[in-house]
Image (cartoon, rainbow, N blue to C red; front, top):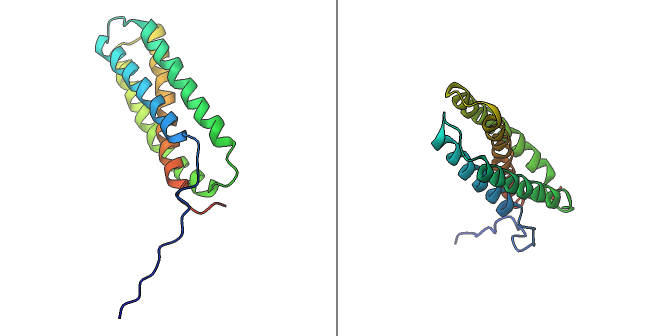
Length: 140
């Protein structure tokens, strides 16, 4: 007769705010804005739409972080560990994308918008990854 072991009892039904969704929507906004700007490079892109997408993405990410900071029973150790390594990877990726825009002679306000979008990009993906990982870990 074989023995059946029960997996660790993770409280998957514990309600969490939509942090993963918000940070993913922030990512979607800046990716769409980045594609819009890249499609015009090196010419001047319509900055109004790109700026609106940047602001929307930044607000969504700020909201996700605001909700994240209010969590009490959460695996902060796991979150920090996953977040720091994911942030390193996405900071390098963002820097390479920034370099591509600079080498394509993107200048002025278009470059500022791209840079800010890349900052949102570099923080939104690690936030999603780390939150999703930590929500299923045992709280600290």
